[in-house]
Every structure is written in structure tokens, then in C-alpha cells.
Length: 295
Ligand code: G1P
Image 1: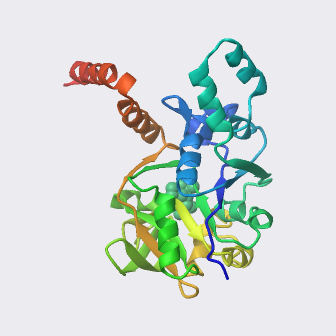
Image 2: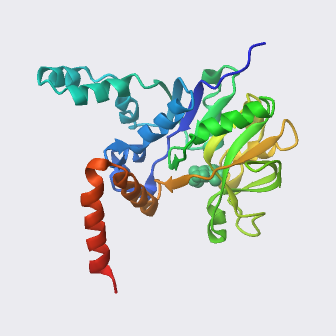
Image 3: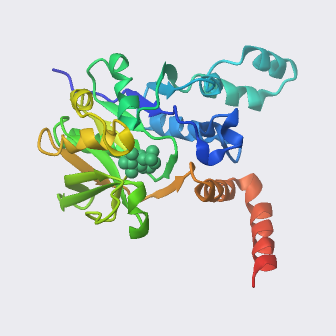
């Protein structure tokens, strides 16, 4: 049998984005710009850099702009061509050929596990990547690629999730794990709890990247409703710890939670400072702002 490859990624993006109202009333929060690209495009670029060819957006009503963003904009390109805007044309053509995009509606807000379950018919029995679009990750090797390498190294059968330490006082916002080390970067997950209200087993949190074998769907189908009355991906992952096994990859790059106002602002500062055309002027503005606001 030929070795499995990672070609499909599922992106749950059906949420209402209440933390970003009123912005998210009409425009999906996944379309918030980080400098000049929507947050979702950074996620797609990480996926493609990890070998992904097909991306499934799990969406809901009024969120069509996410698909439109990756589509060919015929009229716009025609106008740019007429005006000899070569650079912009090239940028748009790279975007519309970046990745093949499909979408499925998650008709009811029944949780992250339910969203992933909606992807089952599209997945066709292959291992998949799952990327949560609020988590913008930066590392020399794209995080999803590192997870896939780990998935292959341990036999293409165990689930792999990305982990990162978070402040203890924030553990109630995450899936939290207890682990046994395997090597410098990989751990075996013994226990995983969704948003523990008290006594978290550690401060190691699941961040929004997963590589999952096809058996995840059987677990999701039988797991029932968990925290908040929702079907939780974490509960299905908990059922994988015994068999086939669940691994954690210790992510050492930078993470921005763009679903949070502060994280969104931090991401904009960090990514603006990486732009040669913006860096000096923006840094000067930041310095001046810090000085003016110093007590
Ligand atoms: C989700 C997952 C949680 C994970 C987190 C990472 O929670 O349920 O296990 O730790 O993403 O960002 P959410 O932030 O969607 O509430």
C-alpha cells in the first residue's frame, strides 16, 4: 500500500464571532485583516506550505466572502489588466490558484466536534488536517507540516495535536493535557480535558492544529454532547488516548489568537514590522506612541 499523504484540511469557520461585534455583524471575523491579508489567508498559506491541496471551509449563513476571497475575480482582473497593474494581477492570480476550496454549511452551532463531523463525506477515509482559523502560528517549519511529520514517524495511525504552554490562569480557555515525554518535541497524551474549570492537569494547551486519522469520525459520532452542551472535538480526542493513541507536538514558534482583540492587535503589529515597506515608519510611530503614553 502506498504511504498516505496529507492533502486535505478542514477549517471550522462557522462561528458567529461575537467577540468581534459589531465588525462581525456582516463580515466574517476570519476576514479581519492582518495588515492587508485576511487572517484566513495566512491559515491557507500555512496549509499549502504543509502540502495541502484541498481545503474545506465549514461555514454558516452570510459567510460567503471567505470562499469568494480564494475565487477568480474575473472583472477585477480584467480592469487591472487594462490598467497594466502587473503586480496586483500576479498577486490575485496566485491567490485564486493557491488551493482548491470547498465548503459545507454547519447548519447548527453544535460545537467544534460537530463541525469536524460535517466534513466526513468530503474526507473519504483519509487522514486530515484540522486548522482553527483564530490561531495564527509562525515558525520556521509550518506547524501543520511538523504535525504531519510526527504523524508519519509514529506509523500514520495516531492523532497528533499541537501543544503550547499557556499561563495557568488561562487554562480554562483551552483543551488541557497531561503528558509523558517521548522525545524533545513529542509527548504522549494521557489525558485531555476541554476548558477545565478547576484543577487543570497542566498548563499545556491544545492550540488550533490537528492531524487526525479517519477513526476520529467514529469517535465523534458516538461521543455525545459535552461541555456547553456541544459535541466537543476534545472529547473525541480523549477517546483516542488508549487506542490508536494521541500524541502532542510541542510547538515552539509564535502564536497569535486573532479571535481576541488584543491578540488581533498584536498580530497586526508583528506582521507590519515584518514588512520592509512599513517597518521603519511604523516603528517610529510605535516609539513615539510609547513615549507619549509613558507614565
Ligand atoms: C478550541 C478547542 C480547544 C483549544 C482551542 C485553541 O476552543 O475547543 O480545545 O484549546 O480551540 O485555540 P475555542 O477557542 O474554539 O473555544
